[in-house]
Length: 462
Image (cartoon, rainbow, N blue to C red; front, side, top):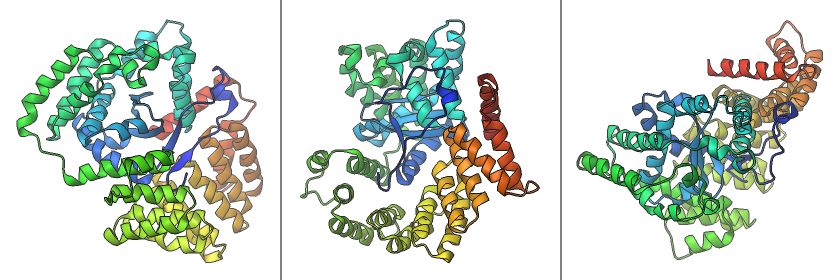
């Protein structure tokens, strides 16, 4: 998917065997350094204002054009790309995030589970499997389970009570007030989609199926928003531009070419428009046009890490690994704490097939894994780096780590066994290989499998 990394992960059969077959239309999660950074800048102050530790709230981007956002399995928030693209102002997007933060802070995930206990509904089983998959490091599988409402009857399970929704409406406004921002976006978002209430259940966007909007709710939010309007600061030009850049990137990467041309015609020379057209040219394999547009963006903002990242991606994907190293290195220099940028640079270095570059890639990948221990692609590339250095035992262990993260327990077991046979058992790597074998042993019964994954989840949380 280019600079935006899309991970459609395989999940071990033991985890999903208890659920009905997944549909072919299950949504996928995407990773993108720039969009994740912006969403964090929007969200972290709201999380902190809600009394949450921002680092404990996991945010996932769902590639889906529908308007939706939801929380599940504890402090996990899912944002659809359709919601980002349809937001007219940063306040609208922040308002939805604030509302969903309310469900976490007010413990609604717990209260809904308690309410569902004893119901015997298969949706409860499905939600449990989704949580298990999420804790096991397979959020795509979790998403497919959480989102399989039509199959598993989960809409009724996730349907919030009116009191919970009203509480989160006002909680979201309070968060905007605490962070000194206007809540007008909370109101305009609800007003904009009031018509959703007039549609049939099947035609409504997912967000409004489980977040029904009433006139009373809108009036209550509008009154409270008006009370705090006088002391609210306007959104900064940077925040407004951040939303436009996210939207341009999403349209460029996941929108059809017709959408790019209609939303960003050639007469539009704004930065977001040129960004979208550069990405669209790259997707159309018009490398010369893409690089020309990207160079103009870099000339205007030479310290924008994500413009350099895009240049590196275009060069790498067009078979120019050596040339892609410099722009990827620049992106890491400008944003040294983002794991995805380090992985991009490491992949380019590995592509040069030069021994010193491969050794440098190993270090970058270890840094990335320190930042994101559950980054499966980083483990994948680390396995490649080890293999190119003839460190087969370490390569097998890295492959086992990757398989374990995505929930492919049979593959994890096989590669961990190979790693254990090649490594010294008195070393940390040898012991880790033995641990993965024990946790992924196919001889374990399903109950033991679920217990092991739950223990792993606790280890990750601590």
